[in-house]
Amino acid sequence: MPDLSLVMLGAGNSTRFKYPVKKQWLRFEDTPLWLFSTKNITEKLNFSKIIITCSADEIEYMKRFESSFTYVLGGKSRQESLKNALLHVETPYVLVSDIARVCVDEEMLARIVEKKSQADIVVPYLEVSDTVVYEDETIDRDRVKLVQTPQLSKTEILKNALKTDIEYTDDSSAIKANGGKVAYVKGDKRAKKLTFIEDLSEIICKKEPLGAVFVGNGFDVHGFEDKKVMMLGGVKIRDDFGFKAHSDGDVAIHALIDSLLGAIGAGDIGEIFPDSDERFKGIDSKKLLEIVYRFVTSVGYEIVNCDLTIMAQTPKLKEFKGEMSLVLAKILHIEPIFVNVKATTTESLGFIGRKEGVAVSATSTLRYSDWTKI
Image (cartoon, rainbow, N blue to C red; front, side):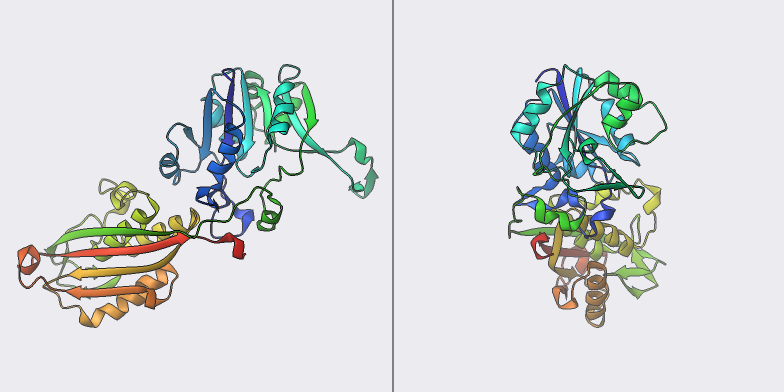
C-alpha cells in the first residue's frame, strides 16, 4: 500500500526471555525470528517502506540478511525506538508491530486495515473470559481489553502523541492520552507475543531450527616487535619480544575471531575492532574474544569446535599448546578437547622461517542453538 509504512520493533535486550540467545535471533528453520515475523506481515500486505529498529551491535549484521529494509538504531525504551523509526516514515499511515508478535494472520491484518480511515489508531484486542480483579476489587470483565499489536496509526497523530516524556506501553495509550480517537477490532489469540521462554509452546507458527553446520576460516599474521610481551592463544609466551599490532597482537586469537565471524557471516575482526579505534589500543585480545563469543551466542549460534594451526619458527610452542586450549575453551564455554591447537615451523622458509613473525590459521564449526531442547 503506497500510503502505509511498517515499523517492526526489535531493539530490546530480551532480558525477560532468560536464554543465552536473544529471542529476536531464535532460528525458525534458518530464519531469525525478527526476519520471520517481518516477512509474515510483508507477505500479506504491501508497504511503501519497511523499518526495523535494532541495537547498535546488531544493526550491520541484520543488514546482511535483507538489504531492502531500512534499519534504525533503537533507543533505551520501546517508545524511544519507535520515535527513532518514525523519523523515517513519510506515509500518512504507519503499522507498528513487535518482532516478538510472530504469528499475525491475514484476517487480523485485514480487520485492522479496514478501519484505518475511521480513527486515529486501530487496535486489535482480545476479550477476557476469566474473572478480573483490580486492586482487590472484582471488575466487569466485559469492559476489559487485552491489547495486541500490530496497531495502525495516522503517522502525524502518532508522532505528536509521542512528543512527551511520559512512557507509554503501546501506541494507543499515547494517542488516547493526547485526545486521539481509538478504534478497536478483534485480535487473535494465535498472535501470541513471545516474552518469556515458556511462551514458545504457544507460538503456533514456530518451526524447528535446521540442524545445519557452519564452518568459518580465519588467517592472521603479525611481525615481531622487541621489548614487548608476547601473548599467543591467550597465554604469555615470553616478555623480551612480542607482536607489532594495535592490540596486544595475539595473532592466534585474531585468527580464531575471524573464523567465528566467518562461520556466521558477520564479516571480519577489522570491521568490529578497527585499528583506528583508540579503545582497542593495547587491549588484551582475550577480551575481544569474549565480546565476539557473546555476540555469536546472542545471535543464535553454538560453537561446536575450533582448530588452530600456529606457524612459527620461533618461539617453540610445544609446552604452551595445552594451556592455550584450556584458556580458549574457557572463554568459548566448550570443553578443551574441542579446541585443538597445533604448532609447526615452515622449515626455515619465508618470513616465518627467517624468524620475522608468526602466522595462524583457524577453523571453527558452529550450529544453530536448539531452543526445542529447552
